[in-house]
Image (cartoon, rainbow over all chains, first blue to last red; front, side):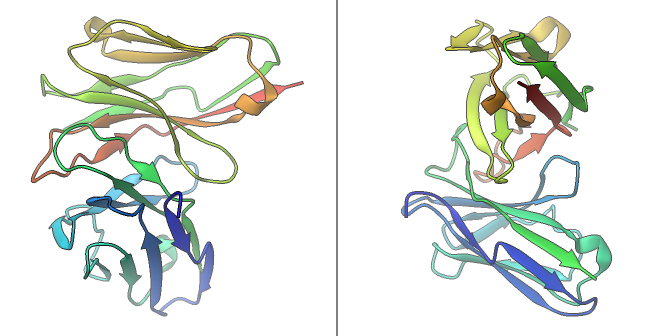
Length: 115
Length: 117
């Protein structure tokens, strides 16, 4: 595809449910980022992949959050036992390179609402 | 730690007015990069510009211009002759030096810009 795609676009979960959010980066992009954007706030970094390797997960808020990118392309962000404070838009971004100030291309996000 | 402050939460102007969005940043690094992104109602962040810390030359792109001043740690964004289509949330961001290649972005809280016809 032409850009980064994410699915689902909207997800409503009951508190305690597990959810999985998918990101399809631009083909060939080495780097993949996940960000969390709370309502009225700027995005905050969650985790980073270089190909299939998760090199930085310093932004994951708890051990309920888990991300993977097993084949170095599609990535999944999983949230276990969702809580109300997990409600946010989850943004995925990809960039073509590794080191350097590469532009990050963002997807439309998945809006997660936890009831 | 890096920090980006966008003090203007919301701005509303009438079409064709000029408008400036402020951005102030904090970093201890001598090498860093600054960005502006636009987030329309669709939610997708759209890249506008990237500047590195060694290039203080101001930049103009059509109706958009950016003023980077290291002395005041500011990277302000001006839209000239604003249009309704410019209505969006605008984010200023700072990139940290890469750790194992992770050039993650630190965003400000954003400024919601509304251009009224």
